[in-house]
View (cartoon, rainbow over the protein chains, first blue to last red):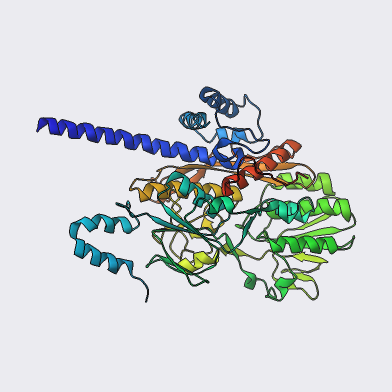
Length: 100
Length: 455
């Protein structure tokens, strides 16, 4: 009985973790897809706007912070960087870093 | 006799007993689809909203059976259509096939929707077909209300173009401008906000002026604006008009007239009537007032926040589902939001809706607080461009200190705004934006050969 309960709890716990991971994944997936209209589908640009696909995670996050803080010059990107949180930079960075 | 799914399901549940209950819940559309049942999504319209939504639904949840109903053979882009009027690009440069969307969806139906039954969850087409749905996505753009302008009847529409839906209208207006003699007058109008593409009319004044400057320098443009002032990117447009077209001097190519809503057109006299004036032109281009697409009217979702009939469709920002009619999602220009009615927004709201639909058909909660952006470029016709960019963040309904409830909203974040000035660099970015948003909407391959020119 105890064993069953423990197993059930373990199972429920795992499910809970999966749900949380999935929810944040879904959020990162949309936030990254949101970039496509300027940076190209999957972050692969067809023009003068830089591609995001495959960028190293730390580099991506640093650029967003630099845009936000006005340390890197930009036409558009400061406006976007100011609207997202550091955690959201990280989530998008991880997403784009994973694209080959 | 109409096929009644619910009666059918009741019978099957009764016969097969408890085992069918899961299926019953699944087919109710709001819960997860159980077993082998594939959730059916019908998308009406394949513009920036509909085509994007179809692609992303199939990418993120292949089990969804996606049907797209679209009357046109090809996608013609409204963004960049003002460059066609200027002779910078041709219709061919802004027209794209649907091949890469057709490839990924389950059914592509070239037809026009004639009826929507949101209680029975079916869509009927002019071709006589009926499509059942679990979730319906309406991406029909705008309906132009010609009746609001006296004399703008079917006959007048043969010679007076709106060119506010890119396609044959754009091509005809270009021909009219080409045929106009040097020294002629082009009369164009701006509808009252909110309307599709807020900076579009002022950009049109720029690109047509750039054409006149090159080819017909004695010509004039009269802009009749239904608004009391320039409704979008005002400082940037005024600066461009001054810099390139003599605005503010006696020789100005552009004659801007605020508070001049067109009330009547007379194509025989080539006259546009406003409350104050009758304005004569050699080419007249009147954009009538607009509202959410015809298909939104058919579905009965042109309802404001209060549930009363209105021009646009109130939606839940987390899902783009109608606030008042279940299982009907509305995208892009048809929605009642504080977003600009831009191609970028249509493309992005399509992905928000797709993301939410994928979660809902799997019995999960959609993102509770989405963040979405708009970036919108305008061209001067003189090799430069400028933009507006905004990040919007969801804010749930709030009870204020005084007890009043603030409804859910997408809050424009600090830092958004417009370019400092027009530039060639931004024109290069505008070119990249166009190619990328077309690629994202239509699934164009990486080696796609764009022919659009930068001016």
